[in-house]
Length: 315
Image (cartoon, rainbow, N blue to C red; front, side, top):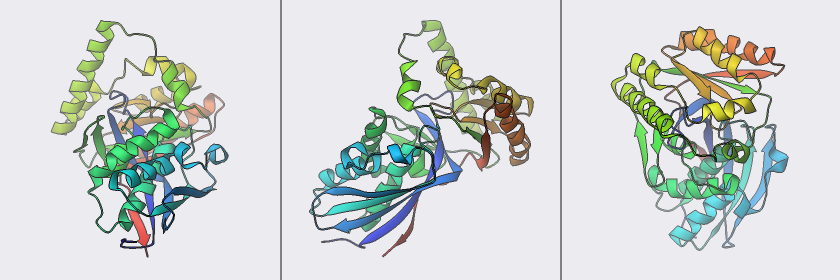
C-alpha cells in the first residue's frame, strides 16, 4: 500500500453556518468544541466506521454504516475519486452535539478527510477535499451545502458555493459569541420551514444586506458589517423553533453586538462583536436569556477567524 503513514488523527472545529445573512453560502470556524477522527489504512478496499465515542449529545443516533455516516461517505468519495486500492477504518470522538447548529455532522466529515489525506502518498491541497466533504454532508442533511464544511477545511470565514470554496479575510478584532442551548433541532426540520416561496421584495432586501455585509468584511468596516448582518429571509421562519431566541438576540444587541442570529439551522445562536472584550461581556447575558426561557446553555467566545481542521498526529 503506497501511503505515507498507517494512521492519523485530526480535529475539526465547530462552526457557525450561514452567518445569518449568507444562507448555505457563508460560514466561519469557531475556536471551541471540536470533533476528532482517527483514520487507519486497511487492506480491504472498503471504508469502515469502527467506533463513535464522546459525551456529545446524539452520538447513539449516528449510523456506523459508512454510506450513511458523514465521515464514512466522504472517505468513500475520496477512495472512488482517487482509485485507491486500500481502504480506511475510522473512529470518531465527538465533541460537538448533533442538532446543535454548530456543525456536528460536518466536523466529523472534515476531520476524517484531513486525517485520511495525511495518509496519502501525495496529499491533496486542502481545497481539493471540498467536493468529498460536500458528499459527506449529504449523509446527514440529504443536501450538499458547504457553509459548515468549507470554513472547517480552510479556517476563518469562507464563501462556499456548490463549485467553489473561497477563504475570506476577517479582521483580527472581530469576535463572536456562540451560545449552545440544551436543545436539539434537526437540520432537516429547520430546512422544512423554508419551503414556501418568498416575496421578491424580501429577496431584494436580503441581497442588499448580503452585499453590505461582504463589503464590510472586505473593508474591515464594522459599520457596514452591522448594517448588513440582518437576516430577513431565514431567521423569521426558524426563530419560532428555538425557545428564547428573541431574548438571546436582544441581549446580544443590548451589549453592543454588530448583529446576531441563529447559528446554522439552530438552536445555537451567535453574535459578532468589534472586540473580544465586548464579546466576553455579552456572553453571560446571552446565556441568561436562554435561562429565562427555561433552557440551560453554555457560551463560547472565539475570534471570527477561527482555526481550520488540522492533523494532530500521524504514525
